[in-house]
Image 1 (cartoon, rainbow, N blue to C red):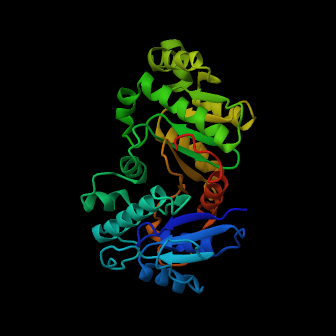
Image 2: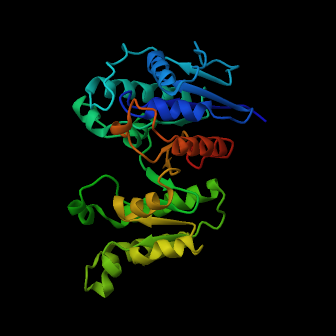
Length: 329
C-alpha cells in the first residue's frame, strides 16, 4: 500500500489539542500511515510529559521518505506562554500558524490530509484574526467559495445549512441557495464516504415543519422551492421533514444523511449519539481536512484527562478518504 502522509496540528496550546493529537498518534497505526505532528516542538514535549510517553523524533523537512511518526516545527514565531485553560491571543496566533503550515503542506502535495486539533474562537478574536475558525480560514487559503461542515458518527451524518449564527439571525440567513448548496455538498460527499445512493433528508426550520404555515412559512417559501431545484438536478432528497422525526428516520436507515437548518438542530442529536467519537469533515475544499467534533476543553487542559477517541476517529477517516477521489480536488 502507498504511504499516506497525514498532518495533525496541535490546535490551541492551552487546550487539550496537543494532548489528544499526541495520544491518537501514539496509538497503533497501519504500516502505511505517516503521521506529522505540526507545531512547536516545545508544545509537543510538554504534551508528551503530561501523558508519560516518549515523543517521536523531530522531522526537519517534509521531504519523503517520512518516518512513521514525527514532529514538524515549521518556521514560525517563538512558542506562546503556557497557560493551560486560559484564553490567550499568543496561543491563538500559534494555532493560526500551525494551520497555515499544514494547509500549505497539503496544497504542495507533502501531506495527503490534515487533521486539526481544536482552536478557541474567542482567542482568535482577541488576536484580531479575521476568520472565526478552521472552516472559514481553510476556505480562504484554498480559494474555496462554497463549503460546508459535515459532522458524523458511526450512525449519524449531518450537514448544516447555516453555521455559527445567533438563533435570531437564522431565519434571515436561510435562503433557497443555502439549502441547495448544503444538499449539493452532501450529494457529492456521500459517495466519497461510500454511500452510493446518497439518500438525503432535509429538516424543516420550524416546529412540525411549519404545520402548513401555522407555525412559520419558511418550509413553504424557502425550503420546499430549494428542494424542487435539487430534485431537478437529480439528487435523491426528501423534505422538509420535522426535526423531531427526521433523526429517528435517519437512524432507522431511511436516509444516509440529514441537512439541518441551524447549528444546534443538527449537532445536538449528533453529539448525543457520538460525543466521544464524532468527526468534522470540511466539504468543498481541494484538500482533505477532518477534525474531532469537540472544542478546546480548557477545563481539562494539562491534566491528562482528555479522551482522544474523537481525534482518533478523525485520523482514521482522513486515512480512509485520502486514497479516494476528493470531489472538490
